[in-house]
Length: 394
Image: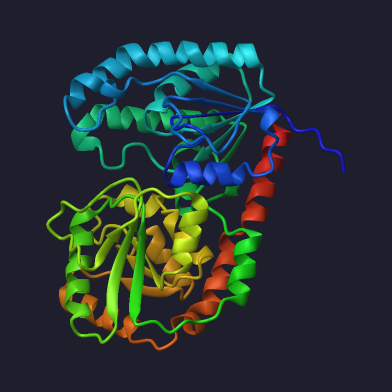
């Protein structure tokens, strides 16, 4: 069957080959899109190697020293707002005029929101929006309440004016519906691919002397993560099997007080294929959020993509979070592992002891892992729906 693909321009902060859950989801959803029909605009340059190819990568680069990480944050934010964003807005307008895409896919992420919100309404360009996260969940104390609220308001405007929309979870869809009057057309997140389902269907249990726990990505709730690690340290002394905690991602935690080099292993950033293979060699996946509800927007409207990666590898999940969090709600719908909701050490220890005492964890959780993956995170179905939405807007 011949197919006419529209010329697609992806606009967001991160580059085509950026690391992290969000970029990985975008690349997964673009699987099959012809390179010659794919353009990308971003605020950050592409790292090496450039394995994911696009026809053109247009960059309104935020200077490295200007990006507000930790030092001189407030002055950098002022410069981004008053100078860089105006130049980036003009850069995006020129890119759209010059390349004349059939459709634009907007992923509003952090500082890209400023030029996106300024440029897109003036171009009269139809666009589809995907909201993966609310802006600066943890940055209010860093960039200030005023900028935090402004970015949130601009995201709402982008969402309201889009031709079509998707979000990562139903809780976010309901929240945006309430605030903007616009519903989400789809719920899209990371997906489980056909080859993953083949692997899951044929997976067999392996008896090991070491229980390997995987943690992928950034630790966002470190106080509660520390409580979990302390519990894990106590539990490992009461088990015959050894326990290892494996970290995957850009951040190193070796210098943290809780890091124990004798049973914690850092793998750093690895390729998607290596990551998949390493996860399949683990026994559990760890998906931690905040146990308290001090940051309800983060708890209720974020669904870490690492959770889906664990499911694709056939790993039961150790879910750590507040009862209203998205990951705990998912764990309530499907028995895919053990759920920790209390900051108290004793119940946490007992839950972990019970989980690690299970003789055959894959046999115990196999049915629910497959049911959850098929019902919630089928990559082919999600990709088909997204491509249809993008094609309708061209």
